[in-house]
Length: 117
Image 1 (tube, helix red, strand yellow):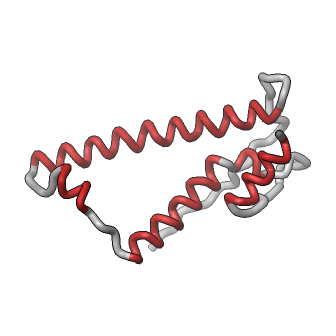
Image 2 (image 1 turned 90 degrees about the vertical axis):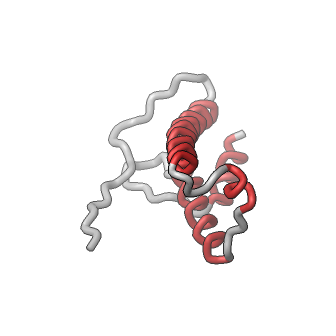
């Protein structure tokens, strides 16, 4: 049973801006969030690959030869969409209030960024 509590992901108060153009601040925030995620992911993947190789479970050649099933591909698409929604959250939330909901899909987020440019 999973009894995890989901807390709102919106901050109270106004967002501080560091650059003259708020779009640059949003882009920087997205970039830093992505950089943090990639760094953690690389460390974890390195650990998994080293442990697997040490224990003789599988090696680099097995990883390179892996062909995902349609179910695996579908799970990856879902996870990728969630990931992109998380890192683009800053441009998906309406700036008018703290109770705003995400504007929609990754495509909608891209439209919002392009509109700010």
